[in-house]
Structures are given as C-alpha cells and as structure tokens.
Length: 606
Image (cartoon, rainbow, N blue to C red; front, side, top):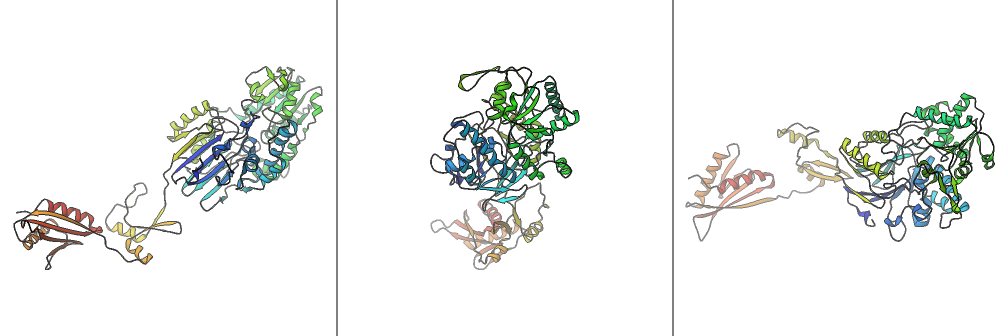
C-alpha cells in the first residue's frame, strides 16, 4: 500500500481496514488518481483489545500517516465511524485535514469524551487517547456544508450529500479529474419522525461504496412497527413491569422519545419515562441548533413548539432503577456492551414482568447480540452468571437503508461499479448477486485487509473548433450524431487544463510555428526494355487512364506529379532492363501514395 501515492489515473484501489464483511470499525482507504483518502475511522463495539481499532499497519509499517494520506472524511458521529479518530491522528500520527459536517463536528467530541470516560475512568484501561488528544484532533477538522464543493488540493475535490440516518450524516462524493467515487457512510432512504430521507443526484460515479447492514432485509411498514412498539410498552407498563430501551444518545433515541411522548399525551398515561444520560440535554440542544438538518414537519412546527422539549420524559437518576412500580427507561449505549444500559439490565434481567426492547442492530460479542440470539445465561465480569428472565424484543427502528433502499440509491446515482461494506458476509453475497443481475455492473465485497482494484475509462472532454467541423462537413461526411462516434483529424492543443482540437493550419498560427513537411518514399522495381524517359511516359499514360479525376503532370525535368506525389525513373547499371521507380509523397496523400505503389507493382500495360 505504501507506493499507492503514485497510482495511475484510470486505475484505483479501495482497501478495507474495518467494516469489510463486518459491522463496526468502519475504515476504508481509497486511492484514486494518485490521491489517498481515508473514509471513516471507527471502533468495534465487540472488542476491548487491540482489535477495537483499525489496523493502520496496512497503510504503513512505521512512521506517521500524514505522508500517506491526502485527507480523512468522517461520514457521521457514531463511534463505529469516528471512535478511532483521536487514536489515529494523535497516537499513530496524522496532521492533514479531517472533513465532516458541522453537526458531526459539534457532537463527535462529546461522544468521544463519553466513550473515553467509560473506558479509562470506569474500566481503568491504559494505552487510550486522552481528553487533550480529543481536543487536538478536533482542531484538524474542516467543516463541510451540504452540496458545497470543497477543493482539498488542486486535483482533489469533495462534496457532501444528505444521508438521513442521524443528525449531520452525509454521503460524500470524491473527484480527481474525471474519476469519482461516492461513499455513503450509513444512510436511510425513508424519512422518519425527525429526519428526512437520503438524497444524491445522478452523478454516475466510477464506484459507489455502500453500507449493507440490512442487505437481505425488506422492512415492513414503519407505522405497523411503531404500533407494535407502543402496544408492547403499554402492556408491560399496565402489568406493572419496567421497560428498558437501550439506545445511543443521538438518533433513534430522539425518534422513539417523540413517539412515546405523543402516545403518553394521547393516552394520558402516568407511568414515568426517563432518559438515563446527561448527553440527552446536550443532544436536544444540538437538534435545536441544527434544526435545518431535521425534516420538514419539525422545521415547520419549530416556531410554535419544539419537538425536542419533552413534557413526559425526565432525566434519570441511578437510584430510580430500584424504585417499585412501572417505568420506561432509555439508557445508553445501544448494544448493552457497557455503561448505564448494562447496569440497569443486570438489575432488571431476573424479573419476567420486565422487558428489554432492542431498537437497532447489535454487533457480535455484545450482550445485546447474545440476548437477541436467545441466550438465557450470561457470563458477566468476575465469572458471575446472570439469568435472563425478562422478555427480550427486537424491533428495528434502525436508520439504515434496507435492501430496497440500497437498490433505490443505485438507481439514483447510476454507478459503474459497486462495493459493499458494513454488513455480514452471507447477506452481502446475496445482495451482490442481486445488484449484478439487476444493474449489470460489477459488485465487490472485500474482507478486512483486502484490496479491490478497479480499472476505469476516464472520458476526456475536448472542444472542437468550428472551422474544423465545417471542413469535415464539406468533405461530405455524415452529420454529427451523439450516439455514433466518428474519427476527426486535427491537432490537439492542451492549454490552461483544457483540450481543443483544431485544424493544423490554425494550430501553427496560434503557436507561432512553421510547418515541417514530412514525406514518405517508396521504391518499386519494374522490368521494362524501354529507355527511362519512355518508361516514365508509359507510367504517365497509365495513370491518366486510371486516375481520371486527378490532375497529373509530366514535367520536363523527368518527373510525373500527381497531387503532392512525385514519381521518377532510374535504371540499374548492371541490368538496364530493370527500372527503379521512386515515389515520394506528403503525409496528407498517404492513401493515394499507397494506392499508386500497389498499382505500379503490378506492372505497366503492354
């Protein structure tokens, strides 16, 4: 990978260091037109050892990453996409630009600090980034606006598109010359209660790199799922049970809070709803701040009522978990792998009256993944065993695109090649076959550490001078047709990064050059008993009869001239009957010159 900086145009590489046939730890290196771009830099929720972060030794065995990377782009603030950022920039070493949207830039450091506190302060881990490293890392961030083209350097440009999913999530188009790649990050093709649907224009990239978390899923109607969710929460609360909903502080949390808040209001329910983290106040503050990133309904009603100021949802205190009676608690993090949600789960797991509702995807190795697979006994830290008696429900309120959404995006963007990441191998295989079948494009799914090389055919735009077009038309060729390629003869001038095709005369004039004549010479041997002059006369007569439309001259100096072609005859000293005919012509008369040499090789009529 170290020599990738010099990758030739028309041939480039995508290497996956995380999220290759796996969900979590997204990190992809794309080499395009000699530029190296890192897409996302996430951590894996299922590991606590060095597998937690991407393996940057794939890029370089020693030294910092600065000289190997032209830029880093972060698609959104989820830790599986940005959790390794301070480790990469401050501990491994990277000083170049890091691009992300304004909401991501605001929220990312809060989540990183929260993650650091859980890992270092609570679990006591060492060899981890510090608060200062997070601050230093964020100083390297360059914020992106939607649909704004940002010039990273002279050749490399990037542009962000709305991705739905979570506040500030973006898909990114990367262009070097005429080659381009689109990276989706995580996206959602259906609008929800607080965010709009992902959108991209028909940019026809050479490669579309898409997440495939729900590669084989086609989700049922959202309304049915919401009804089912409210029914289960209501039934559990009515029988005096407690409901735990593990969520990440931003995203699904706000979606489900809006849903429960309106239901509690409508049904006039009294059971308390709590949100377990101080992050939610900050989260709601950012939703208000970046209101333009939410959907139309929220923007419209924002003046009369702020959807993120909840009447029924209160801040949670640790002691409330032991309170008798029903309650609903939103607790972080969303996969039950650490933090408050895991503590509450341990307390409530032994009572069958209680329920845990998993509203999103759970990575392998997390407690969430284990209980969703029906595990009733869990081995916790310190070899203690936890019996799981409470009801476990999975309801996908995930903000990822399903199979239908992924196909919809392909139709929108019309890519020439497809690369799937952030999914499970078997599911990706199924989707890969479906994409290749339906769109007749190549689809790749590299594993971690694997490299995919794609050959592109860059189209180079060239302006053609009007005089040259008129000349072509005068020659009686077919009319110009966009669907039928045709050959044009002219001189290609490259000036100020643009190409023009002009007539040779115009090129000489513009560039102030004098014309050099290039002539071709050919020798033809011929047996003829006549003198040299007589042989030349016979050639003249023969050509007059064959080339009726051409001007043919017999010049007194012993030459025959046809257009730019000069013909001379000499005899061999040893064999007077063996004549050597010399033909010479300029490159413009190449076809006629070849025709005459072939004609004379056949001999003269007797």
